[in-house]
Length: 151
Image (spheres, helix red, strand yellow):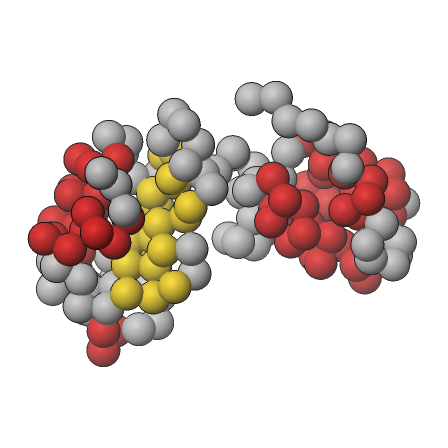
């Protein structure tokens, strides 16, 4: 995957060039590229004067960050206990079928990334699917296609 990194410095320079800005900078890079490219991690370490190991460590510690390219739209199927009991596995299977990718993968067109998560903290709404940060509760298999807007 080839990205244009010409604006990488501009993204990093939106924040004070000090170690305390690391997480905010990584979040901004993630928003820009939908993941943390290796080039961005290296450049961030250089700009902040941090060891590469420190930036990489933070990048891998937080679940919000991804070192793998992700799609424009992030779909998370909750498979926690309440969601599992209420049919999360069937929702996951339907999503995998419609997107034609297994959970944990991104569609070849880089439009969707399908993830399963242990719990999204919305058990009363089970089963829950989170699309681009928006929570959808009491999701039915019949509503999956509309939810992800796949034709």
